[in-house]
Length: 119
Image 1 (cartoon, rainbow, N blue to C red):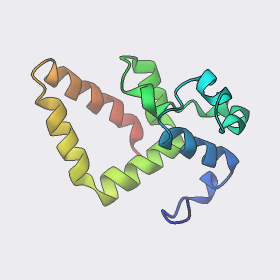
Image 2: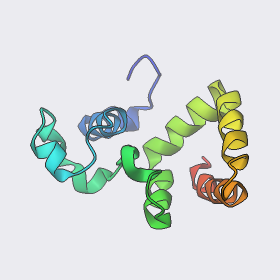
Image 3: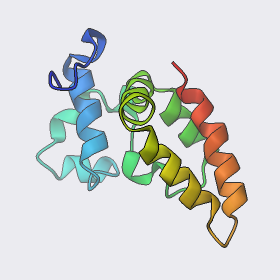
């Protein structure tokens, strides 16, 4: 977490648990956590609620908004896709928009969801 110059506010156990949930996509529900070596995540699970592995698979606007409003996601999004690699975001948005089935609707949806990421 020091390598990416993470702000002090995220340099605690809850911040570490948030990063773990985002990085380990096999952890997607409470049972996965209980049956894994990451059981320590249960301490902060109610506060974190960052199931990045499922957030984009479900069509649930409430979950997506909650995800994008999370302070650590706002910071990471800005660092990775605005500051360091905006081309990756542009490429993804173009790909989403070009989907033959509901591409324009998916594009509008992600653009609306991303507004919660503004820092």
